[in-house]
Length: 488
Image (cartoon, rainbow, N blue to C red; front, side, top):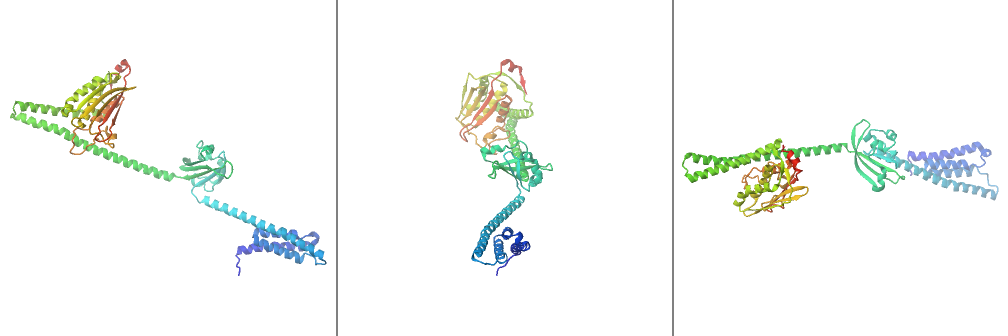
């Protein structure tokens, strides 16, 4: 058996009621006022198919044909009359059937469209994105119902803005850009909602084929995500800062241990030989040797203490420079003489190549000699027996460069960025083969910077030597340089 739902029964009921109404009106008015009753029944078929659908419309058609045939056609008195009535019924059916089909199809299409629009409305109302459509000038043509999710404005309030730029901010985007790029994605834009709260929205923009010039804007709030990203970045920065501070503290602790060791070693030698001298048990040759060792140890301590004082003065901004216009050749030769004995002790050859056309510089000759001496001492320290060191002075407009290169142990790539830093030494083990505080290169960089220059270190790698380059600006005119007699 067929089972009909209440909705289906109501649709068929509408068809039956429409035909019954046409039947009743035709009976009431009679043939005087309605010589052709087909018109009312045609309307009944249209109503039945529009509100009920195809099957109720066909039912209305059948009922209308039966009603007209049985009640409103005269009895057949001749063949001609019967043929005319048959043609009339056929014509009615031929007209009413397509009307029923077309009407029901149109009704289904409208229902489908309405359901689709409702589905889209519900979908857009339940997503977190705000969707807008504008024309080519940016004027709103559509606003999704949930624009208030991000902006706090209702749909009518957003439409009242008129143009998208008034909602997102003036001058942030020109829709004509889409003519070349086609789509603009993931634009982070700060917006202010209705309550005045600043929010971050991720905006995507593209043209759509709805109507010529139509632009689709999709806005998604990412305020919480940005805050989480910022918090995460802040934690990373804090962790990096803590790690850097801990590394600096460890470096300082290691530096203090090195300082203690470097100061204690010559002090121990001095105290030991002083006791032997005081005992009077040394002969003349041993006494002379003891004095020599004490003097050498004292000078070693003096250099260590002077380095510490220089670092302290530089850090406090109290280092005094006696600035004058000078040639660098005598300065370099003096520094080479200072380290010649150390180099000869290791059979290291020092080659000096000075360009006579190199310009003069404005600087403190004693401090610049200290710079070159520190570089040479560092090269001698890390160059093995029988190695080579080359010192070059050259002009590189508008600067003058001093280059010290060696065939020593080189510098590891990971340590190269820290070679001029304080408290950083590549070899921090307790069994260090090279003595010193590791302050010489830091002093070099700071002194060169005080002279307006730069210091750079390069090395192909461990065991392949190293090159240190000092670049200083050429001096101004001599009277101007002499006018600046001191610099702090």
